[in-house]
Amino acid sequence: MPAPSADELKRQAAAVALEAVAPGMRLGLGTGSTAAHFVDLLGAKVKAGLDVLCVPTSERTRAQAAALGVPLATLEEAPELDLTVDGADELDARMRLIKGGGGALLREKIVAAASKRFIVIADESKKVETLGAFPLPVEIDPFGAKATRLHVERVARDLGLAGTVGPRLKPDGHVFVTDGGHLILDCAFGAISDPDALADRLSAIPGVVEHGLFIGLATAAVIAGRDGIATLGRLDPA
Ligand SMILES: O=C(CO)[C@H](O)[C@H](O)COP(=O)(O)O
Image 1 (tube, rainbow, N blue to C red):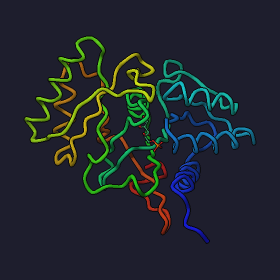
Image 2 (cartoon, helix red, strand yellow):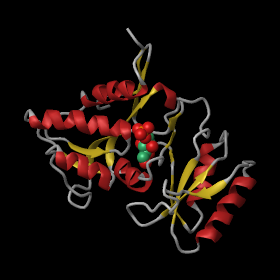
Image 3 (cartoon, rainbow, N blue to C red):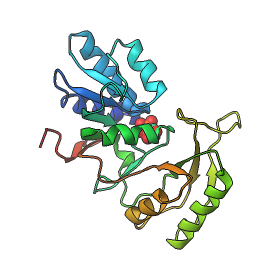
Image 4 (spheres, rainbow, N blue to C red):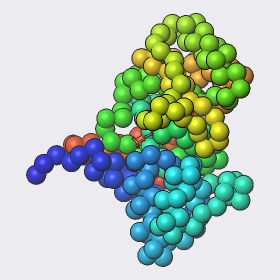
């Protein structure tokens, strides 16, 4: 039998996370190709009668979930969630994450922080020893974008990090704008030896709206690999 593709592994991880969903739950729905598998599988359950209320983390996920008939609410309407399931660009053994490859990191972090539990789903390529091979997305306000970029570069230098910091562009060459009207700086620092310190320093820059380091938010992770499924943390309520 051929080895499962990365996309099949993403779906396997999503299927394991789906087992943590119970009737009546309020759910946060992540963004990206792995989260899209979860939404797809959840849609089939809803069609079969599962009663849940979901808050999407992006317009893309909202459209997918709506098309599948998944009941949706805004975070204003449902400000406290039982569980969020989302993908990640990288995760380490302490369930510290880099997120934002899909540009939805601000809403993803707000929704994760509003959830009692946050399960990360990923294929094995996302598991790393040290965060940073994936360029860290930093969401900034368009006002003073150049000044904010210089500030991010100064902070990186202070922490001994090198590498390019540049605005994310769309494939057509135009600047990428998030659902919230912000810009993204992709920071190719390489190995981030102290993600906690970097997170604190980035959060203190006035023009930074949010950064893609998710620390202390994930309560469990499901990592699907060619040798099986590995989990970190607790998938059931503590
Ligand atoms: O943070 C994200 C979007 O902002 C995604 O979770 C992350 O980019 C992973 O995406 P994929 O599941 O497509 O690999």
